[in-house]
Image 1 (cartoon, rainbow, N blue to C red):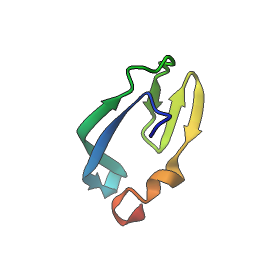
Image 2 (spheres, one colour):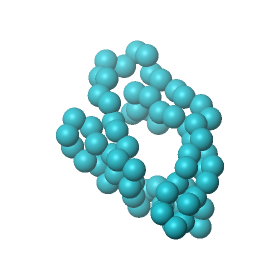
Image 3 (cartoon, rainbow, N blue to C red):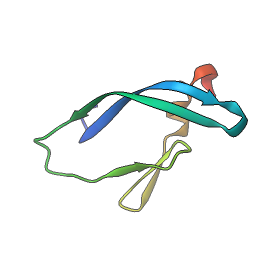
Length: 70
């Protein structure tokens, strides 16, 4: 994604359905070293993310990435 400072490419390693936990395995990391903005975005774990105190809801966008479209 061109707008990202960095990203980690992951594959789903396991889905623990009883607890609704998705276990990911990192397979690659990418960083744009020339970018001036360096905000950190934190995954909350439920399909939402937080950057500078602002919450981003990405649950719907991530749904198709999970086995069975969970």
